[in-house]
Length: 363
Ligand SMILES: Nc1ncnc2c1ncn2[C@@H]1O[C@H](COP(=O)(O)OP(=O)(O)O)[C@@H](O)[C@H]1O
Ligand SMILES: [Mg+2]
Image (tube, rainbow, N blue to C red):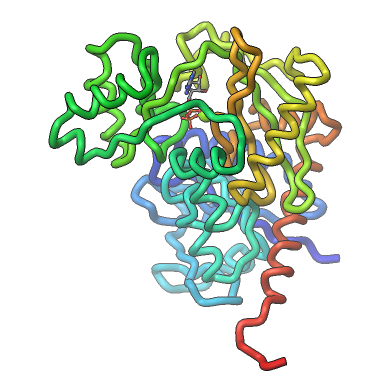
């Protein structure tokens, strides 16, 4: 059987560019060379796509030929912006997008891949957009009866008009301590824990640098529990894991810099807690229309023992030491098999979508 050509698409115009490179590197090394040919496609910081030379690791493909993917269905072919042939590397059977943040994880890239008619790993347009927007996701979770912490939404224009009034409203409705977060961001960028009144306006202004929608959410004194999800229907949940950091919360430093951040796999939970959080995770993934992969993150409040759903990430960190692959490893699915499964799911979903009618036929 001929090998499947996987386009590993990474990088991008976001603060998580480096994180994406690290994930792509791990995936590249783990994709079974007897089953797949890999085309490395790097998105540089200006948003241009480059087709890498196969012998080079993802970190250095950014100097490859500039290419683009035409939004015309069915060709599956990257074209060179300078003209000229790209050879087999430009002809992909499936795309594995590992582009974090805005433009990569929020449905925009998925929209392009849909228009191009290429099968791709992970959630579609709607699922990606819903998971990226913390505020919309929280409204859906609440409507579905899933436990979420109370929040208020502050708009950037409210801040520009009267920041003090916006802060007062948050203090009145949520109280201190609270978390301020941009609605569409990741890696804890722009997130602040606010403990005093004086910290609130500066925190709101900083968050407003990253998004026009800002959440003020009750801060919970909580353990952080994560569950990895895989599948479309059915969705399967991994064993839960726990993050322990010595910092005030799981901020950017704790995620990527501090070597003392611990990932406990499996999380020390009793059997009922484990079953409860896995069930909530599957339900959460359904509510935000997640497909293929996801990671549901929870806050387990110390005082009450209650789980609060924090978010579902459509594109969790994917290096071989990241939580998502480690949770699957601990659940009996090693990293290379996990990649096989994700690619299979992408092809299955594409087949199912392609079978839908595009013209109206009277029956
Ligand atoms: N309401 C909250 N109560 C306690 N900790 C929180 C709360 N919201 C966020 N955090 C902390 O901030 C971190 C990042 O917030 P999160 O909403 O997960 O954003 P991101 O998408 O950047 O990961 C969490 O992992 C947690 O440590
Ligand atoms: Mg998070």
